[in-house]
Length: 319
Image 1 (spheres, rainbow, N blue to C red):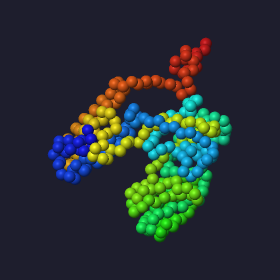
Image 2: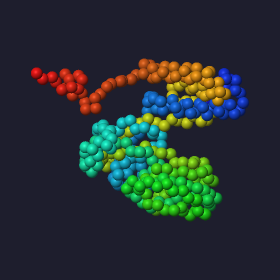
Image 3: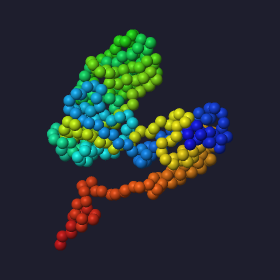
Image 4: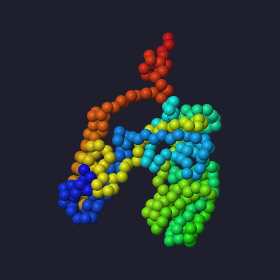
């Protein structure tokens, strides 16, 4: 069922037929779809991404930062699940592990064997550099806000009005852009270094989407193909003709959105019954995801299987 069909179905059930009722129902359906998408690691949500890494040819528009060994992933990726090269799996580690046990790993040379999560950001540069922000004359006075981080970890939030004409805003030496926001403008507003525009917000956009980042431990050889298994962000479910991108999720959506419409009318008892129905349907959908599709569930100890006779990971008994 499309977004429009689901909204019409719910509005008919709850006897709310005004245009504002239909618009509210579509809003509830969108939010509930995002909630259900993020609830589980659905098979429909898993995507693959690959990129060839190189230590040369870097410019400010590149997503591989060879100096920092950091990869900026596409906006469509919400969570990184696994990383590997063509030859080996890369183990995930936490920064605390390196600081407490093996700090020298940060300067490790040779093939990359591990990786770690980094906080998401709007953009990052391999080294700190001078950046400028520019807009069109018609948008003079529009407020732009940035949250910038230098390589030494200092984070500053700055707001200013765009200047007249094609001039530039205040310049800053930065290494990472955590946020880049503005109000709606008549033309795009862009951020650039001396030679390249690397971040731009369209006229209607109000904030730059954030990108997942990962850092490799080790130095990958030029031409290494890095493969990333990830959970995607929810696909668009905004147009009247859009269908939810999760197989079999319609019944859950209908129940939860109907509960929202009833709460909107302060019919909390009926809404609670619909919530319970939605939860039961969600549990059923989870079972369908496992039982009615091929899957492989295994419990693998972090350090491997070890002694085949030591089933519980204990040291053998001695007498």
